[in-house]
Length: 136
Image 1 (cartoon, rainbow, N blue to C red):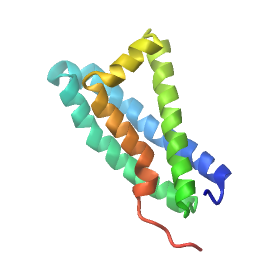
Image 2 (tube, rainbow, N blue to C red; image 1 turned 45 degrees about the horizontal axis):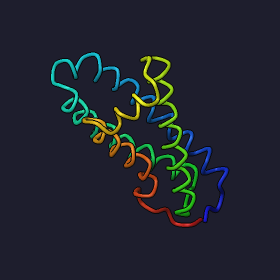
Image 3 (cartoon, one colour; image 1 turned 60 degrees about the horizontal axis):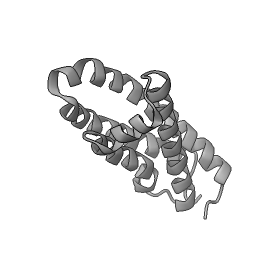
Image 4 (cartoon, rainbow, N blue to C red; image 1 turned 90 degrees about the vertical axis):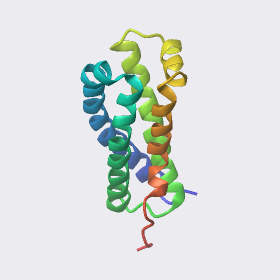
């Protein structure tokens, strides 16, 4: 049960914004430069450890800064961030790349989509995986 759900929701939105900004930059590099040279799967596999490392440090910093001690608060933070990420990715696919929602979903379930999806799920779980704080 969350101790402070509003704080957890706000922190989840901040977590999303922080990691999405980095992902937007790295994704641009991946799509425009790395994927044409190395292939989509290798490009995603190259980007993934960077994003997960950033997620670890970002989640740890935000959990500490906003004093999210309860697992419920951390779960809310991760769920909100993951939900916002899925919404943002769907909107970008539709508005920037002219895909339909069905095309976006197909991309999520066909290679290398599952690799990225696994990374996104880890991003959502990261607030639960960072070290626990002691209650004040």
